[in-house]
Image 1 (cartoon, rainbow, N blue to C red):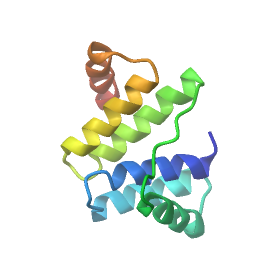
Image 2: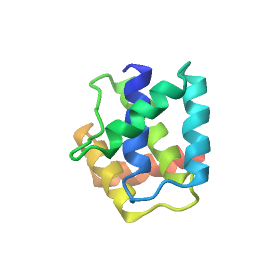
Image 3: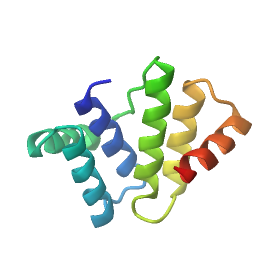
Image 4: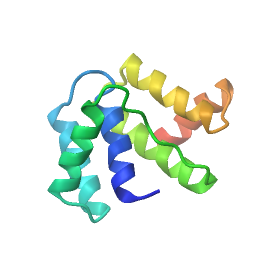
Length: 114
């Protein structure tokens, strides 16, 4: 998965609850830096996520999927609250990646420990 796609996915998660907090912006900015992206890619991610029907793009690579779910979880937790809309989006992504209900609970526990 390309770095720009990863940031778009994180922005979709950040906006899932209808709010973008300062802590979320800080996390996204730091994650952009870590991925070697700049302001233009961050702006493009905002534009993408604000479009009607914006969705998280999933991967078929199991290692990349685990990494993506970890990033999505950290994005959810960045503002200090796990909103229902965010949890629902995370669960849908996890199910599409092959996790079932019990696996999702274990996955969330494991990701929150990291």
